[in-house]
Length: 145
Ligand code: AMP
Image (cartoon, rainbow, N blue to C red):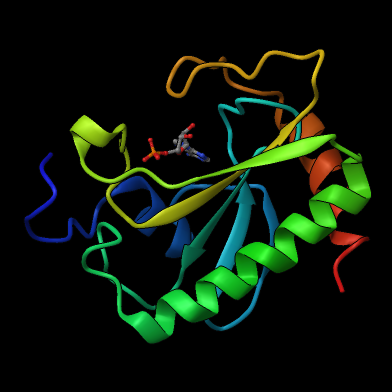
């Protein structure tokens, strides 16, 4: 998939947003959804998406939606930090297949980092136990401002 092209309404995040496939929600409002990455690159890997935009990549994204989404990323990252106490975190956002993107509904990754734990490769992490993800999401939600 290139940087350009039509939004696929059947991409996996669109299906999650329509409730057609399950996800482990962290929080949502009318505009954004934060949910656990089911193939986490580290403990507490969270994805944040717009519920209203059909942007595939950063290039397509409406600036006002991006502003709202970025604030949601910060709110989520603050809660992740309080809940899981990482030593750092990586904020990632991939564009185009050559850029590492696999799901073409713009999203941000919040990946907690610890100096003594290697981050798993993007697209190479095993599927997590859903009950474990739910427990992590509960801890993160408890720290939302
Ligand atoms: P990207 O490669 O940047 O497009 O990221 C897509 C992310 O979606 C990857 O980190 C995947 O692990 C994650 N992912 C794929 N399917 C699901 C799903 N059903 N629920 C949660 N995360 C998913």
